[in-house]
Amino acid sequence: MKIKSIETIQVKEFPLIIWVQINTDNGITGLGETYFAPNAVAEIIHNVLSPLLVNKNPLNIESHWRNMFDMTNAFGYAGAEARAISAIDIALWDISAQFAEQPIYNLLGGKCRDKIMTYNTAGQYGNNTDSIDAILNPVKLANSLMDQGINAMKWAYTDHYADINRGTYISNEDLKLLSEPIRKIRKEIGYNFEIANDGHGRWNLSSAIKIGKFLDDYKMLWQEELIQPVNVENHIKLAEEIEAPVCVSERLITKYQFRDYLKEGAIEIVMPDLIWTGGITETKKISTLAEAEQLPVAPHDMTGPVNIFACAHISMNIPNAFIMETCRAFYEKNGWYNKIVDRNIEVVEGDLLAPKGIGLGTSLKKEILNRDDLIYKKTDTNSDNFHWGGFNSNLFEVVSKNGKKSIKRKL
Image 1 (tube, rainbow, N blue to C red):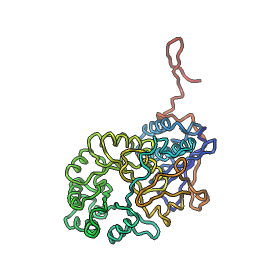
Image 2: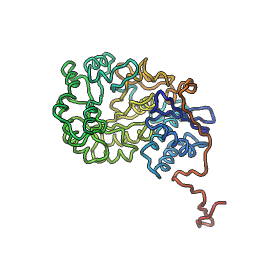
Image 3: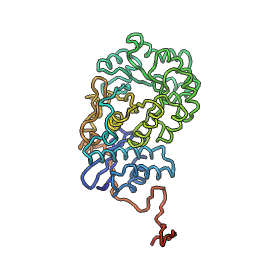
Image 4: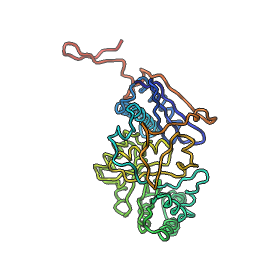
């Protein structure tokens, strides 16, 4: 089996998402996805990574990941390059599992569970008003989630206060105001409903500590990205100052960046973003590093349907999976996932169920390719001018004769 072609698919209705399809010569198609700067991702996929992959065996996932990483590491891997690798990696796992006629989690080592607890991030689509209710009608929102068996939620309670002065200062008055939705939930519902805050990396350290300490009275599930993950020591200081677990974070790319935070004890909840950090291959390894540090993993979502399927496979497989982020505004009957994929995720009584079927468990709807807002590109050739190390090494070769090695120019 060989890779025949690689396609990128975008639709203008959802401008930040790009899907990748890898087609093989025996008719299997693997699906991947990533989020943000899709045009840059497409260029990396077609001009840098596809030449490494076309006509190669798709089952050699570890080799392909290494080759793609080493190629992009020659000029900086942690942006569109890592997102492109992530999308391709998911598609390769989809192909391998379809070829084996198994779900992906079985290729990863099988299931540790059949379902995982979810929390709802208060997004918005169509008639859904979760993101507005999170601030203006928090008790209504919490009750509606509990009616569905979902007993945890997350929102960016501090974002619009950070916008006032770029996160350099938070007043006591603003602290009281931003905590009002949380206070109302605690007063009306109590502490059986979990609440997490996402700071989106917008605060300086002193403000983050002040926010964390103030919200500790409400027994938060975690504080996520109150500061940017660019300084290990400051995350340690933050963790020492506040009671809520410090959650880090979708901005760390590959096991190499996670390693430093894990080694120094700067993370209390590990939150890899599968479609940014390196795909299924790398998220599995990051989860193993977290397991060695006795830490829980809570995969990051709030993007597209392929990511949540891939995260579901990881969450079923790894022993230290804690909770899975979902957005009901996206996956429910009137959400937009149903426009894109032929099988949606299943959330039952607050739990994300293991994907059904073989491979990833879903695929793009065929009508996607007929949309008026389609942006499509396909690559079906490889190139001898591309090399995994970022340069062409085909001018010379090392030869051995009579037990001695020498280097000569290739003809």
